[in-house]
Every structure is written in structure tokens, then in C-alpha cells.
Length: 303
Ligand code: ZN
Image 1 (cartoon, rainbow, N blue to C red):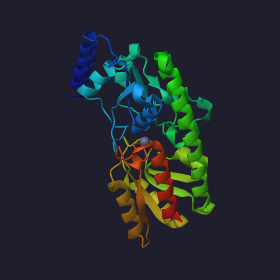
Image 2 (tube, rainbow, N blue to C red):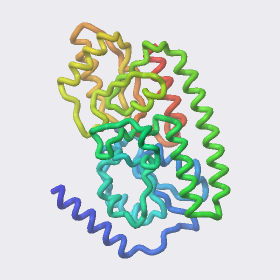
Image 3 (tube, helix red, strand yellow):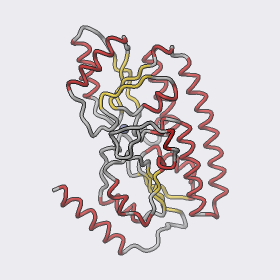
Image 4 (cartoon, rainbow, N blue to C red):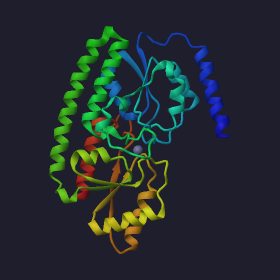
């Protein structure tokens, strides 16, 4: 069944390519993005001069996301494709392989590999959750500006102005985040979440990070993981653990139940936005709003 589905997908890609003509709509670049973080970034830089189509919405898990027929059409009609890469979008790799003539841009691949956190789990050998380091996200911003300007030199100045404004906001975000985290004593900086999305966050801000599931949600947490982590929570007297918006709640609830069964109490400190932003149009629907919300939620619950 899976093979059949893949075959249909590849045939579809071939057929859409063969009837494809020009790509720009109303003189605007058609840009296709994957995760909500990248969609928000690209909109900030491209503004009125591009059409952005984000494949993944709020609450969508990029590790498990598969391309629909509609997505393939969008990708084939794109002038530029931006994605995270480093194997975050694990089920889209095959589709991007077939889009080679579109040269999809994996923003994560443009980072200095020596500075990334290694991981055996991903085919990339790196932890792909790089957007939780704001410095890396700023590198994404710069890369996007360069690519948009190369494709559409007439508006290069406009993209550059947007880049400057957005980078300023990200620098302001960095100081704000540091200030909020300063209010949390160092020994309370232990972050337990549904899956290991926060390693870069932890490295930057001095948190010990433990995810119930591995780096990818494609692996289920087992009973052993729940027992081990619940013992750790009790030993370290951790006040709160966190649900993630793109991962089912039940894993964290099982962990809470395991802690309770041993006569201890741990609260669910809130829902964090890990691999997807909040609803579009809300504060948490932006990268900056998401970061602030997450940090306030974490610090308030662990204090
Ligand atoms: Zn993840």
C-alpha cells in the first residue's frame, strides 16, 4: 500500500512537471515553505512582494508530515522552496529529492555543522530543532533575504530593509528572553517535555532538557522511558512538566500518572510550541510571540 502510494505520488510529480509553464503570479514570487516558523520568517522578509504558501499549519508535527497531492502541486509551481532540513521533515525527503531542479533550500544545512548538536537518530546526524537558538534563526533570516534578492533583484532593497527590521526585533527578543530566564534559579532549570525539541534552547539558556520521546516523534515512548523519567522527576523534585502543541498529550499525562503512583505530585505546566507555532493571527502564531510565550510558561511553572 505504501509503495503504491509513493508510486502515485511520484507519477503525480512527473505529470505536474510536464504541464508546468511559468510560475510567477501577478509578478510576485511563489514561495513554498514547510514549518510555521519558516513560513512566518519568509513572510516577514518577503512581505507584499511574494506569495507564501506554508504546507504545515499550527499544531502539525513536521516529523510525521506527508505531502498531499495539493502540496505537490504547490511545490511544482513554486519559484522558491524553503524547508528546515537536517531531516526534520523526514517524510518529505523523497519529495524534495524529486524537486531537485527547483533546488529546494534547506535552511538548516546552511549552518556551521561543527556548532550543531549531534544526534544518531536522524539521517542528518544532527538535531534539527535549530530554531530554538535565536542566533541560528537570524542566520535563516539572512539566507532567506539573499535567496529572495537573487531571484528578484528589483526588490532586493525592500527585502534588505525588512531583514534589518526583523533582525532588530530578534535582537530585542534575545535580551528579553535572557531577562526572563534570569528570574529562574539555576537549579530549577530542568525542562521535561513530550519530545526532545529543546536541546538548543537548553544549551543556550543553561537548562537540562529531557524529552519523553526521542528527538523525533516517530518513536513512541515506552513504559521503561516513563518509569526512568518519573524517578528522575521525583529525585530532582521537579515542579512541572510540559505538553507540546504538536505532540499528543497522553504521553505527558502518562508520565504525570507515573509520578503520582509513587506518591509524588508534578503539575502540567502548560502547552509549549515546539515544532509548530500557535494559531495564525495570534501572538503565538509568530516566531517571536511563540518564543516569549514558551519562556514565560516555562519560567512561571518551574519557579
Ligand atoms: Zn521535533
